[in-house]
Image (cartoon, rainbow, N blue to C red; front, side):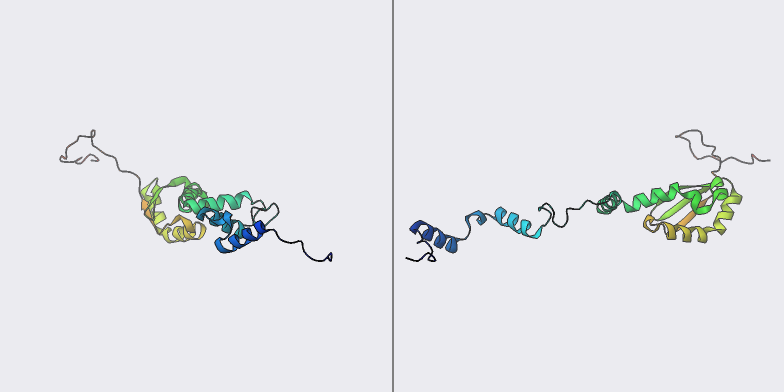
Length: 169
């Protein structure tokens, strides 16, 4: 007998190999087992030093979180409202403030009618600056509001009457 010859195979191992060939791997019988095996083959992150295991920067993680959760537009709107003085300048920001953004319209409240008129003349420049600086805010137009007019209503249940009359006489 030569030393190069493989040892004779037992009958049990021959039957096992034949059954495995006919019926497949016993660990792969359930659909869950097949899904786990397919995921392990495609996913390299389960190996200790494989691809996908390197740490990500905090800014990348927060950017992807805001993108996945759909927070980019509300965050850009909040940033626009807080950076108002850098958009229009200190002088204009001292006499006007953004009220809010609804359906793509930025409302700006002014301290006087003169400043409201001035901002209406600057409306195109303001909108261009906003769209360039904060594209995710979704601002399509700007509405300039003058100072609030005084109200002569006397509570929540007031009825329409003749109005204020000539009170400035």
